[in-house]
Length: 242
Length: 242
DNA sequence: GGAAAAGCTGACTGTTCGGTCAAGAACTGA
DNA sequence: TCAGTTCTTGACCGAACAGTCAGCTTTTCC
Image 1 (cartoon, protein in one colour):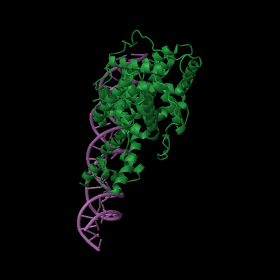
Image 2: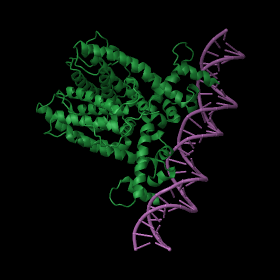
Image 3: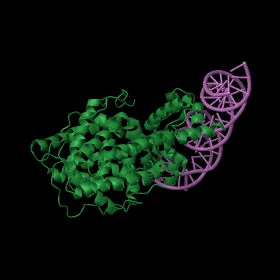
Image 4: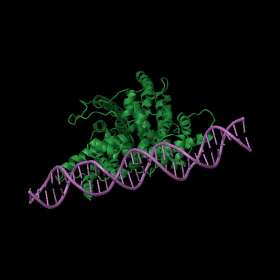
């Protein structure tokens, strides 16, 4: 029953206790490979063998760290959800709506550029019923949306932006920004481009911002430079799926 | 080799020749069932047995009409793509931008309401690389977008709407309208509703229109009544996935 | 009415895939 | 150094699945 312990430790992504350097490294490798394979093929289409190959480990090893395919999938989703909520923090009653919106849209577009696989895994999960994230949606996300809708309503009431249905407005932002990760194949084909570069994303972000701010009845901010973080690892832009 | 002929006939969805009343009826039943199952489970997750059960036919019968699972999937996609392009016809140089946009957004939202499965099948296909619709994207869709982008550019040049990047603007409309079909689970959970009714969709459509028209710098049209067709079969609004 | 064509389907097959396991290798800490 | 723990992995298994097929029934058309 070594698996029982292994599974628990992996589940909670325990960052405490230095025990298991090997474990942490392997878990991370597997999660990264799994995110990619799940994004490309969906839960049902992904195979443990594919993930194992991508991670450079034998299949039995994945089962050692994560008991089952579903456990692994849940761990991948957990990872994604944890970073899903953060960027909307810029929405506070006292913030300037233009600044807050600009920061949020920029962050979401950055997420679509740098972590397209994460976005796709999430989209795929929702598309197929979201049974694995039901609680997240109905509790964490709903609370957050309720709170942020209140902030937006406050901005509207104060005449600081045009009247909008706050929730629909948030849906619009999510739809548009995530579209650039989830539907990248369609976008590339329609634009006749093989890949979307960092520059492409900068231009698309600027246009999305223009449209969103206009929809909110706000003036466009003059940004010195799109705050594209240069610190991140040099990821291969949006990968072309062969 | 009875299959060889069956497959050909099904592939081309031949509407000519009265041969095969039974065939047409069964093909339609199977396609309808398949669209639903593929939407719920994706290509890999769907099983021929599931589709057969939903269609109320033995599995071997599906293979009689459609040779393989992939053939059936392609037929479902074909069906979807054929209706995907039509509603944008309202974009013509002489049309009033507000009217054209209103008609288009309304049609897209209606599609999301009445045929959510179709939208999901398409989304799933794109999400996973779109290998089955590559030609459609790169040829049919690209041509259409090129043409309609020209129309929008004309409107902008004539000062009839605010300056936009025409292609990004179209992406935004697609993203937002299809979001209501593809991410319905998330929307329902966040709004705390079990289903989205016709009335819900009317309200959401109005809000989407407001945002889109504002983004285009256009005044909102006063619509007598949202042109919800009452002719269609009384579909079960957006089905809740259990 | 009869023959040819079209439609039907239970039973079967080969493959793929998730998951197991036992035996051993590599670490860890005293 | 050595015992205990963690990690590794090839070989295997059973279930699920797409696809086949032979023999049957129903429909069509003369």
